[in-house]
Length: 92
Image 1 (tube, helix red, strand yellow):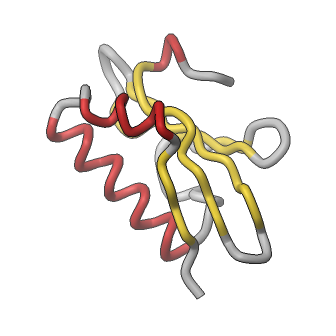
Image 2 (image 1 turned 120 degrees about the vertical axis):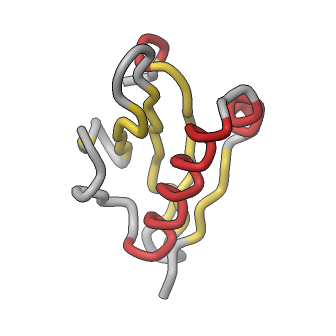
């Protein structure tokens, strides 16, 4: 069974401000989460944060772009992406 991935309202706005290559990386990550679940050890600098939050870097360099997501419900397999943007403003 696949996971359902939704974007938070603020993440929708953040997504629209990203460059096209970074946006494509975001969609690739979302596709991987849908297929394989929220634990993404195959992405660079992946890490589990406190609680049900996870993060990884989708673009290294200056600036580094980060995606943070949270497992909302394990029984119905629901994940919400709560942040996408530069590393400096990430909600760790």
